[in-house]
Length: 117
Image (tube, rainbow, N blue to C red; front, side, top):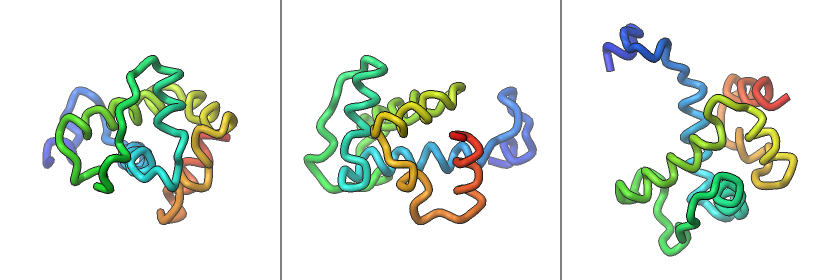
């Protein structure tokens, strides 16, 4: 972690807001009451198989490694390198904009708003 904090990695500076967005999307993917269509939307657009994540009520961090990897794959597809995917998901009701920054501080909300507008 010290190497990442000092930004010695080849990937450049760590964007903590982007990591927080990734985590928030993972959270939304497992909490169906917040964004019930998000997983199906991503699976349809990206060609991933849909796996039933609603069979238990575990939060993202409590899930097994296979499920966490799958959820991260879906979330990363939505935000990696192309903000248009996230904008389109909001426009097509795959995810509600207000759910992206629900329960988060204003800096994070501002980051998302800049990204999608």
